[in-house]
Length: 391
Image (cartoon, rainbow, N blue to C red; front, top):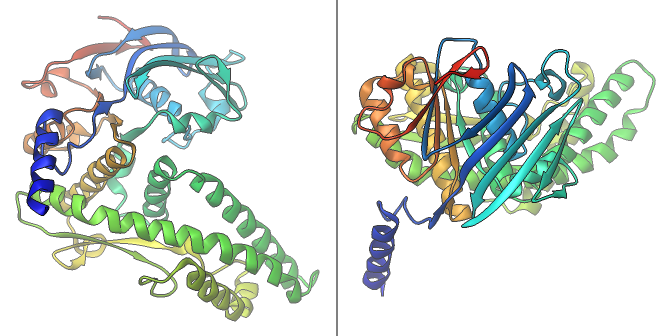
């Protein structure tokens, strides 16, 4: 039976065009056309895209703005940390973005209007929020900011986990929002207690809310890290030419092990109660998933403490490629891949490995010189100058 199952995997992989472990999706998401009006320095553009799209030009001409505009259709906020109001071209009341795309072998359209906030329509029907577009449009983004993820503090590594989970777990975004709202309320109460305005007895309500939501967040993060193990190890072995073994582990206030969500909630509640005096002193909640970390190791030792800059960057690339692979597996469709000015940071071997590993995905790549990216790769180029395409 096992042999027959493996043979079916191989046959399916051949039809999909790749290794059975990472070519099991049947379709690829693709943006065919995009219209842009009054978005940052992009005043008016209508662009037709190919499978590989290289956006090139000098710095500060609008290359990243184009990548960012595509990413907004996943329902996420700007990967550059900008507020919605900052995305509208100076002097204009609103920006408008529209795409014609194929998902699940079905042609669709989506539109975003951006003022102080974003509003969205999908196939002519208004969505309750722009975030709802994430149910249809999936993308993985690589940016220079991601290359310092290992070196930076744990907040960036938590962000990596949370953004990845938001694309594959329905309701995770709301769960995270509920937790953060309860955390803000509890911290406000801690400040009032420290100032003598409120009694510490009132904390139990927010302790219960945090423990319930926090246990579910921990449970889902832990499951995602477990899913990362196989593709992360395989990808990093290829990226490092077999010289390094990578590991990933979720670290928190206690050993999460294989605990059920109910036990995670019970232990988290107990910790919150025992930490009350310390929390009042610090006027902040000192335990919970908002303090978790994703510990990355190379050959068993901490990549953050002992890895070179090159090793740390390779770890990040492996994490992002593994993220893309998990997204493929969960949705049975290849996501869009957005590579914003990261290829120039890599040697030729790592560039080729990434491009080969992402075959089957629609690629958007920004760079200064298109020739260095398109070695042996067919694709469409867009030369950006001052917010306009000039080729």
